[in-house]
View 1 (cartoon, helix red, strand yellow):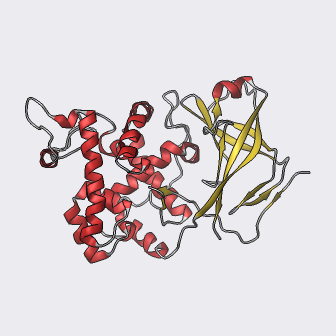
View 2 (cartoon, rainbow, N blue to C red):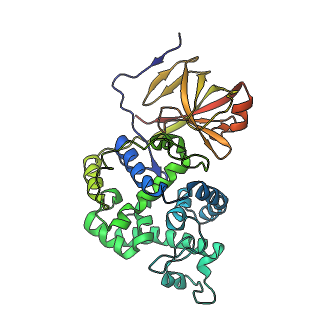
View 3 (cartoon, rainbow, N blue to C red):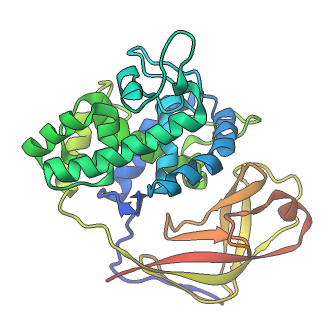
Length: 353
């Protein structure tokens, strides 16, 4: 009988990245923290509409980011800033998709006035935002002697001068710095949005329903976490304590990506969000954190409908992701309903020892 061989004593680690670097937090805390941040938005934001709006902008934003030499993860910044609403305006006067302040806009040559406000112009605003982000990155390296993307993005929210002062007093680790509440949570929010958009299958089960589906609502209330019972709206104290414990722990580096053949047992009538399907391995799967699963091993997984595809929670956190043969995440819903067998690839992240 096919079996799974687990590595004795292996400790799985939840690997979450931002702009190519691992976020230095342990598994359970980052999951709870992300859920806590996201949960505050789920009941007040129309996530299905937001995803649809974001998906229409992402290809355009990615082209600008690439042209300016910026990491594609930064495409999630406008979601936190404005929800991709061109006329969004903050209480302090920031405006547009990128929420650019009037003085900053004028400093980069934009027209800001009663009759015309170029911050609402997608092309011009995105160019200025990319320039500003790049200037923050190079400016921090010049003024503070070091730089990383979390701090460069914190400077987008708080201003480069304030971040330089904070770095001189506290070092260069955003995740252990004491900043004002908004900036202290700012990068977390971007990471949380990235996680929810890219790995919804890992988080929908925590909510008990598909937050990106207009057809479903909460089935059950999420189980409270330690952070949920902290009623203080400023939860930075709890965050800082956990990070202080884990600041010296290094997240493993990814050595390579491997692809393992498998197949999904399909022809599932009336498939609904959260339903279980069966995956069968057509090759051995050797993972860094979860041991060896032999060819022929079958296991049940939960599926979630995202746009026109189904994503599966495999039980390996970020280590293993199911892709179709074109290396797109998940499988088409129409294939799951109509085909008896769907050949897939399991992308397996192998970490350096």
